[in-house]
Length: 172
Image 1 (cartoon, rainbow, N blue to C red):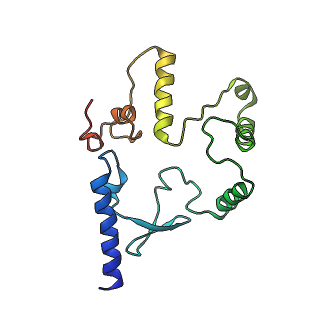
Image 2: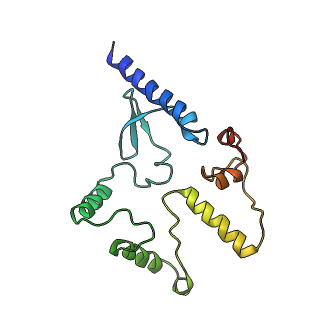
Image 3: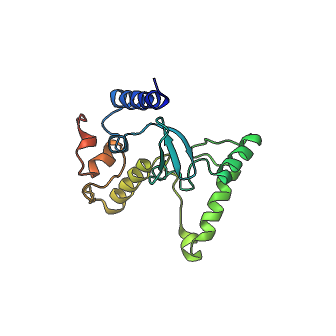
């Protein structure tokens, strides 16, 4: 079997496994059927060895690209210093530095009254927090959203989307 045929079978194997094991809530894999083997900068390489430009930028979480040297250096530095990487809402010196820089970037009058909310590791968490904030602030129960927009894969965020594919198989 040629190297290309072996790679294609690997790509297909991963995609078939994903389709069999993951819920219908996944969105990009159905439209972009690749299994990624390597990633660097803005480029990804699939299991077939084909190179692509990653226009998703890691679906919003990798704005600097994949394996960016500055990010890798910062991560290695934190690891070497035994700094905590996953602390949820607990504070750390690194988190405090981030908050200080964020507030320093805001207009001073706004910053004096501002509060920050760390929503969690996903955009869906942020949308869920926004839904709660709007309902609390307005006292209303209804939410307006754009049809077909992607708001996340949680139950509440999927309810905001007019796209039915992700919802098929979900009840209640």
